[in-house]
Amino acid sequence: MQSVIAAKPEPFALDPVRAALIIIDMQRDFLEPGGFGETLGNDVSLLQSAVGPCQAVLVAARAMGMLVVHTREGHKPDLSDAPPAKIARGAPSKRIGDPGPMGRILIQGEAGHDIVSALYPIAGEIVIDKPGKGAFYATELSALLKDKSIDNLLVCGVTTEVCVNTTVREANDRGYRCLVMADACASYFPEFHEMGLKMIAAQGGIFGWSANPPMAGAGTGPSFDRLRMRSHL
Ligand code: TIU
Image (cartoon, rainbow, N blue to C red):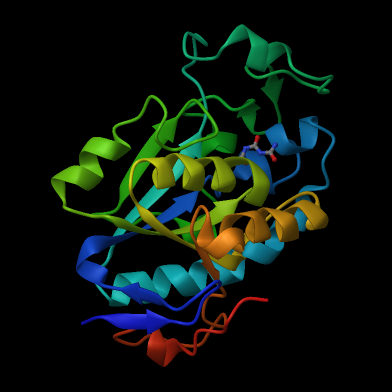
C-alpha cells in the first residue's frame, strides 16, 4: 500500500515494497562516552535525541514489513581497510585502533563498534559494515538493494552532516530517492544538523527529501500516514 508522507520540498510517495529503512551508525562508538566520537572532542550526549525517533521509525518500518538495514562504521582489527590519512586526521585523544573503555576505537567486533541496545537489529535485518562515511563505498549495499528491486531509501542515524549526508549523496547519484527522517538524525553540532537537512531538500530536493518521523511512542500501524508524520521545517 502506497503512503504519502508530508516532506520538504514536497510530499514523498512511499511504496514500502520498493523502500528500505537505512539506520546509519547508531553505534556506541558515536553515542556513548569513551568511543570514537568522544575521542574527537565531541559531547556525545547531543546524539541521544535521535534514539527515540529512530526507534519510532524502526517500529513503523518493521510493522510495514519494510527491509531494514543497519550500518556500522569501523575497521578490521589489522586496520587494513583504514586509510592512514583517516587514522592520522586531527588530534584525537585516542586514534582508531587504540584501546579504550569500550575496546579498541572503531574496530569491528569491539563493544564500542556495536549498535546501541535500543535499536538492536533483529533476525532478518541486514547489518552493513562500512569503512567510510558513506554506506555505499566499499560495501555490498548497492548489490543488496538492486537484488531486492529497492529504489527508495528512508535514512536516519548519525551524524547528520557526516555519514547521513555522505550516504544520501552517494545514494542520490546512484538513482535512489532518499527521504531523510529529520528528528531521527543528530549531530554533535546542532547548527550542522539543521543545515545538513536543509542542504538535502533545498533547490527542489537537490539530494532528496526531509520529513519528521512519527512521535516516539506513537504506536504501530500499517502505514506512516497513521503514525501522524509531521512536516519538517
Ligand atoms: N565525526 C562525525 O561526526 N561522524 C563520523 O565520524 N561518523 C558518522 O557520522 N557516522
